[in-house]
Length: 477
Image (tube, rainbow, N blue to C red; front, side, top):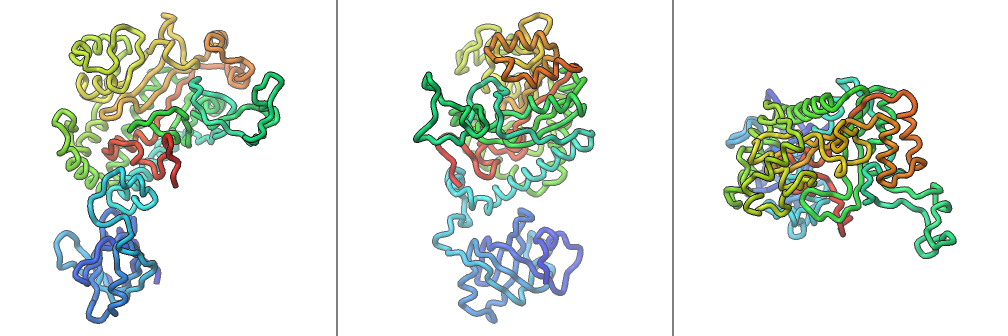
């Protein structure tokens, strides 16, 4: 008999005379009641065992973490909290689990302990919920862009260009480390490497994405990106997923409209399709915050916060206006900020972004028109010659969740900006071709997928919203 998912059994509209369910034991009480979960839902189904007619050696093997198959009838539950339960006629142990050694015991574990057991943590309620929400959000990303007529483009993971100009990239090489070929001046001879040049793992698919937007009109990428920056924080990963749309003929205002509409769509999609999981995560967050000082607690429960994002327009504020607000703010005047804002041109830190969102405006904020010297070379220079058509979207609890811009479509201006930063034209000849042949206004943005999942789930550490986090000094699993 083919097994039925626990989710479908719990959502059944009638009792059923014979069904089969498979899953993992969460708890086993009184030698009679099994809480069974198969990952299809956060909710367990209770399986009632006839212990008097079940061999003792079988009962002893029904332990937390064991994989089992149960056959029986779906009947109305006599206990509170669930509509149906399974009256077990036949039980088979598919895989034993040593109760004394299985790390995921039915008790509260610290998040740090669970990170050390990332291969098993998804068997807990919290991580099962997070990963189901992540999956639904991933589908929502594709759903939104496909409905809007965007073309999904797979940009390269191995690249010879540094889109951000940051230089913090993981090198890709097939050269031997113990006998690396050198040039006459002692430098590594990349001409003898696999690709015949220096290559890295990508930090962004944007530049390649732009080339496709200038032919297909509107495209998006959604794939892994890599940063070799030594940031051991709750907001940074060395490997993460990035969503990057690029749209021909869109200016900065169109770009802001697209980003806001996109975020509202995917958040609503998660709320509509992950009710049980988000309700559980809301309760988890409320419980966790009881131990925090009042000032550090969320002002809204999770679902209310998600509703607030869906139902309210994002506040649009120029960088110049934001600097004035920050300079005159109480934390700045009392030197409570770690990075004091003294003058225009400062690169905003997470503490400044969160102040604007959480304390001043109390809603998501889109900052635009940043100083050119703190932004990337490809952003369009404004007429004032000192700011660029950049935008960042700031969210409560996270800070920057989206970074984007109108791209510099003018060939001469782009070349001058590259020269000023020491970027060789020959390294990006193909990118410059898009400005040589049929250039037009175009815009795009990047959204770190894990930061979106972080916001929607209410988690506070980005390592807890990706299956196997990659961080400095940690590439376990």
